[in-house]
Amino acid sequence: METKTCTCCKKEYPKTEEYFLLKPIRKNYKWIVHEIFRSNCKKCTYKKSNENRIKKRCIELGIEIKDWDNFKKESLLNNPILQLKNEKLKGLKRSLRARILRKEREENYVFTTLEDYYKKCSENISKAQRKYKYNTNSKINNNIIRESLPDYYIANRLGKSLKDLPKEIIETKRLLITLKRELKNGK
Ligand SMILES: [Zn+2]
View (cartoon, protein in one colour):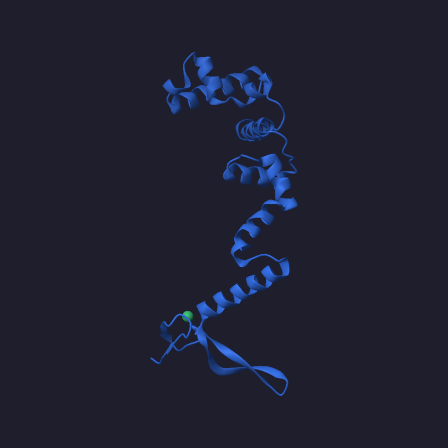
């Protein structure tokens, strides 16, 4: 395979479009891409154009190139949008911050304090549990528990701890309770 040496980094690469950019030239007032490769490899070309961009920006700003990194950091920190977000979520772990921001985005939630955030989350969890356990969104009362016969309720009726009871016993007891109730209601 034919190779080409970059005039900048002096490394040898295959002479293909994967490693070298084609040179545009002007012909009849039009830019056309000529089938000639640039003398610098892609990496060096991109690096140089980035350096040139920074150099130009530094001249505009009236700062020295060696101060560019610090300048960028400073201006990021002073960005009003970032500051606004930082203000209330200051000092929080990144993952927690992300969760809060997602909640704000998706649930119309407005973050005030961490305490409030945890409270809102646990409310949501108990809401989901209610939906799952009792198929209801309303607050749980004795009637709802009595109707839906959750495992712990049955264990209570048997006077035992839930973890000491095999699943079959719970199922049987549930059936018995349902049957008794139906008989009582004359079904
Ligand atoms: Zn190079």
